[in-house]
Length: 425
Ligand code: AMP
Ligand code: GLY
Image 1 (cartoon, rainbow, N blue to C red):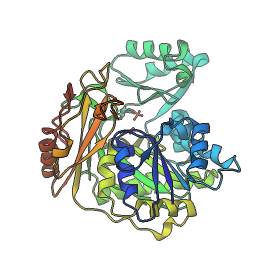
Image 2: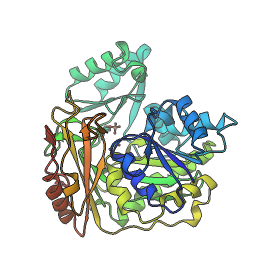
Image 3: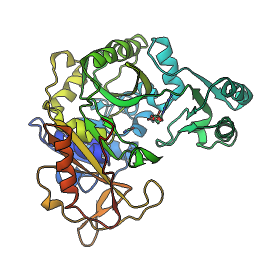
């Protein structure tokens, strides 16, 4: 079958690499992809949110399945767009319909969903411009730190944690009254601060059945020891030592099963990944957020541990026969360390030549923000997060050692990375 994968990050290179190994695949296309995906498939110069452009490509290349990497097309309703068009409705789409994607697209929707099904999460209230003064009263009733979340998608920047009441009142006002995040902050969720250690749990569901993928931990802050501003993610580790069987059983019983039950009860036919952003408080899991896709850079550590044929799993999702599949895992540790451009997550340069990939041994390099120079054909930087170096090892330390040894062989001007991935495990 012909598959079109949407997206252009490290997550998509890891997915493309895995899909390209399937004997069920004829040709893999990636839109828009990056320099890494061009080695395992054919890149098409179409943005993942350009629905008419995607439609044309699907018809031209006789695509049988579309796999959606990032959240934007899902929240914008790409699956619904396919279902509504007689010319492309036969194409399988891996990724939920818009209503399912609202679990990520609206924090308020997600919170109400969790409340309806008794899923553990931080206590919260939602406010709008008209209820700003109630929001300020609510802040007065909480203890610091204060957690403010723009309701809609804000490119991962919509969560603000304030140390003081003054700062929180100010932020709330700017978000609601001055549209700090545009329409995304028309509503703001204020919630109780939870203190604990975070992890990411993933399932793949056909809407009735599901399989659990390996869990992972990501490192969001730019600085060593988890300091400084948030990024898209600086590295990841899978498995997560503290997520033992006992803890994962709580995750299944208290979070995954009630989420599936809720989706079914509400008639949301969810076909795709659910990413549970969890926090372990004492010994118990709580949901920080839902995402309607895989995580990045978690995918770069999760996918190399998956032994199943990913195309076969996606076919089972489409046919609602996932009950017949069991997940087979590489028991080893996978670690991914992200190389980023100097300056990221603020302003950074692009177009720097990347050298040394051919010298990498015993690790995989998943490209994120990379491109190919139009004249010289050289691989160049094209984003803040440039590439993830992923390794497998019997221990986390062995895997990390391989990643760091190979990082030393890769060079580009302004190369930065965190040298402490996994430090807290
Ligand atoms: P989110 O975009 O919802 O994943 O939030 C971004 C980050 O903010 C999370 O990864 C957490 O580190 C932090 N965060 C969000 N909600 C809370 C909360 N209720 N308590 C503590 N930290 C939180
Ligand atoms: N690594 C977190 C995310 O993909 O949202």
